[in-house]
Length: 156
Image 1 (cartoon, rainbow, N blue to C red):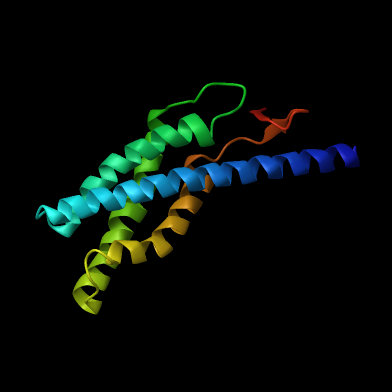
Image 2: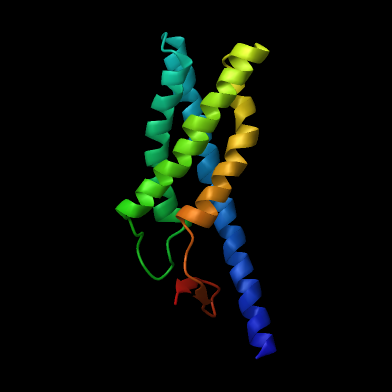
Protein backbone atom coordinates (compact mmCIF):
# COMPACT_ATOMS: atom_id res chain seq x y z
CA UNK A 1 0.00 0.00 0.00
CA UNK A 2 2.73 2.51 0.94
CA UNK A 3 4.77 1.48 -2.12
CA UNK A 4 1.72 1.84 -4.38
CA UNK A 5 1.02 5.31 -2.97
CA UNK A 6 4.65 6.32 -3.48
CA UNK A 7 4.64 5.12 -7.09
CA UNK A 8 1.34 6.91 -7.73
CA UNK A 9 2.75 10.12 -6.21
CA UNK A 10 5.83 9.98 -8.46
CA UNK A 11 3.75 9.34 -11.58
CA UNK A 12 1.40 12.23 -10.72
CA UNK A 13 4.43 14.47 -10.22
CA UNK A 14 5.84 13.38 -13.60
CA UNK A 15 2.49 14.21 -15.21
CA UNK A 16 2.47 17.65 -13.55
CA UNK A 17 5.98 18.41 -14.79
CA UNK A 18 4.95 17.40 -18.32
CA UNK A 19 1.94 19.74 -18.09
CA UNK A 20 4.13 22.58 -16.86
CA UNK A 21 6.56 22.14 -19.75
CA UNK A 22 3.75 21.99 -22.33
CA UNK A 23 2.06 25.05 -20.77
CA UNK A 24 5.39 26.85 -20.89
CA UNK A 25 5.97 26.04 -24.56
CA UNK A 26 2.46 27.18 -25.51
CA UNK A 27 2.87 30.27 -23.36
CA UNK A 28 6.20 31.11 -24.99
CA UNK A 29 4.78 30.78 -28.51
CA UNK A 30 1.74 32.84 -27.51
CA UNK A 31 3.91 35.48 -25.84
CA UNK A 32 6.03 35.88 -28.96
CA UNK A 33 2.89 36.05 -31.11
CA UNK A 34 1.35 38.60 -28.74
CA UNK A 35 4.45 40.80 -28.86
CA UNK A 36 4.57 40.61 -32.67
CA UNK A 37 0.89 41.58 -32.94
CA UNK A 38 1.43 44.41 -30.42
CA UNK A 39 4.49 45.74 -32.24
CA UNK A 40 2.76 45.57 -35.64
CA UNK A 41 -0.25 47.45 -34.27
CA UNK A 42 1.91 50.11 -32.61
CA UNK A 43 4.00 50.32 -35.80
CA UNK A 44 0.94 51.16 -37.90
CA UNK A 45 -0.13 53.86 -35.46
CA UNK A 46 -2.56 52.08 -33.15
CA UNK A 47 -2.41 53.34 -29.53
CA UNK A 48 -0.55 50.94 -27.27
CA UNK A 49 -3.66 50.24 -25.12
CA UNK A 50 -5.66 49.15 -28.17
CA UNK A 51 -2.66 47.24 -29.57
CA UNK A 52 -2.46 45.36 -26.29
CA UNK A 53 -6.19 44.53 -26.44
CA UNK A 54 -5.98 43.26 -30.03
CA UNK A 55 -3.04 41.02 -29.19
CA UNK A 56 -4.91 39.80 -26.11
CA UNK A 57 -8.09 38.79 -27.95
CA UNK A 58 -6.23 36.83 -30.62
CA UNK A 59 -3.72 35.05 -28.40
CA UNK A 60 -6.15 34.09 -25.62
CA UNK A 61 -8.28 32.21 -28.13
CA UNK A 62 -5.19 30.41 -29.42
CA UNK A 63 -4.03 29.60 -25.88
CA UNK A 64 -7.44 28.23 -24.92
CA UNK A 65 -7.50 25.85 -27.89
CA UNK A 66 -3.89 24.68 -27.54
CA UNK A 67 -4.04 24.13 -23.78
CA UNK A 68 -7.28 22.16 -24.15
CA UNK A 69 -5.95 20.01 -26.98
CA UNK A 70 -2.38 19.54 -25.74
CA UNK A 71 -1.73 20.44 -22.11
CA UNK A 72 -4.73 19.79 -19.90
CA UNK A 73 -6.68 17.06 -21.66
CA UNK A 74 -6.99 13.65 -20.10
CA UNK A 75 -5.04 10.95 -21.92
CA UNK A 76 -8.17 8.81 -22.00
CA UNK A 77 -10.40 11.31 -23.78
CA UNK A 78 -10.31 14.02 -26.38
CA UNK A 79 -10.03 17.66 -25.42
CA UNK A 80 -13.03 19.00 -23.54
CA UNK A 81 -14.18 22.43 -24.61
CA UNK A 82 -16.68 24.25 -22.43
CA UNK A 83 -18.15 27.71 -22.22
CA UNK A 84 -17.40 27.83 -18.49
CA UNK A 85 -13.73 27.02 -19.05
CA UNK A 86 -13.46 29.53 -21.89
CA UNK A 87 -14.99 32.24 -19.69
CA UNK A 88 -12.46 31.42 -16.97
CA UNK A 89 -9.61 31.54 -19.49
CA UNK A 90 -10.70 34.96 -20.75
CA UNK A 91 -11.20 36.17 -17.16
CA UNK A 92 -7.72 35.09 -16.07
CA UNK A 93 -6.11 36.46 -19.21
CA UNK A 94 -8.21 39.62 -18.91
CA UNK A 95 -6.76 40.19 -15.46
CA UNK A 96 -3.15 39.52 -16.46
CA UNK A 97 -3.25 40.55 -20.12
CA UNK A 98 -5.44 43.64 -19.96
CA UNK A 99 -5.86 44.98 -16.41
CA UNK A 100 -2.46 44.19 -14.92
CA UNK A 101 -0.60 44.64 -18.20
CA UNK A 102 -2.28 48.00 -18.93
CA UNK A 103 -1.51 49.32 -15.45
CA UNK A 104 2.09 48.23 -15.89
CA UNK A 105 2.27 49.70 -19.43
CA UNK A 106 1.01 53.02 -18.10
CA UNK A 107 3.55 52.88 -15.27
CA UNK A 108 6.52 51.96 -17.50
CA UNK A 109 5.59 54.22 -20.45
CA UNK A 110 4.03 57.33 -18.89
CA UNK A 111 5.58 57.49 -15.42
CA UNK A 112 9.01 55.85 -15.77
CA UNK A 113 9.47 56.77 -19.45
CA UNK A 114 10.53 53.38 -20.77
CA UNK A 115 10.25 52.82 -24.53
CA UNK A 116 6.80 51.50 -25.53
CA UNK A 117 8.43 48.58 -27.38
CA UNK A 118 10.37 47.45 -24.31
CA UNK A 119 7.67 47.84 -21.65
CA UNK A 120 5.58 44.79 -22.67
CA UNK A 121 8.71 42.63 -22.43
CA UNK A 122 9.32 43.88 -18.88
CA UNK A 123 5.66 43.14 -18.04
CA UNK A 124 6.20 39.46 -18.84
CA UNK A 125 8.22 38.98 -15.66
CA UNK A 126 5.08 39.81 -13.68
CA UNK A 127 2.18 38.74 -15.89
CA UNK A 128 3.42 35.30 -17.01
CA UNK A 129 3.86 33.79 -13.53
CA UNK A 130 0.55 35.30 -12.43
CA UNK A 131 -1.22 33.88 -15.47
CA UNK A 132 0.28 30.42 -15.03
CA UNK A 133 -0.93 30.24 -11.43
CA UNK A 134 -4.45 31.34 -12.40
CA UNK A 135 -4.65 28.83 -15.25
CA UNK A 136 -3.16 25.90 -13.38
CA UNK A 137 -5.11 26.27 -10.15
CA UNK A 138 -8.36 27.88 -11.28
CA UNK A 139 -9.14 27.44 -14.98
CA UNK A 140 -7.77 23.95 -15.57
CA UNK A 141 -8.01 22.65 -12.04
CA UNK A 142 -8.97 19.04 -12.48
CA UNK A 143 -10.24 16.25 -10.37
CA UNK A 144 -7.58 14.01 -8.85
CA UNK A 145 -6.39 11.49 -11.37
CA UNK A 146 -5.73 7.81 -11.30
CA UNK A 147 -2.31 7.08 -12.78
CA UNK A 148 -2.14 4.01 -15.00
CA UNK A 149 0.82 1.67 -15.21
CA UNK A 150 2.14 3.52 -18.27
CA UNK A 151 2.23 6.81 -16.34
CA UNK A 152 -0.79 8.45 -17.96
CA UNK A 153 -3.39 10.20 -15.89
CA UNK A 154 -7.13 9.75 -16.20
CA UNK A 155 -9.86 11.44 -14.17
CA UNK A 156 -11.51 9.32 -11.52
